[in-house]
Length: 105
Image (cartoon, rainbow, N blue to C red):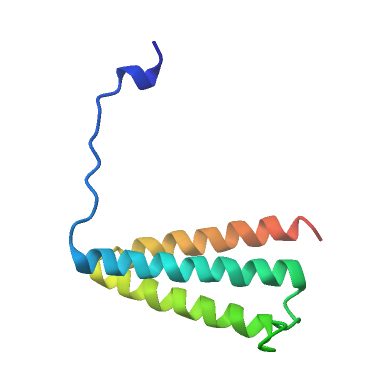
């Protein structure tokens, strides 16, 4: 018998509120677009352009990030997330990643 066999079942309850679903769903959509934009920058280069529209990859990434930030703001407000706690964690993560990135120098 492993630890999972001893744990009580926990029935997850999906969101039922339409407005809750809209907030989370739109955030997920925008996060997906940001992943696509960042992937294109990685594959083609940030200074390249989308072949059909000619839009620079950097602009696509900026637009995608702006859309994510807007949705994060709305989700934070809607669900009354702790902005101070998130800021502290964000600041710690930035410092940790700066140190990590500097390891390549």
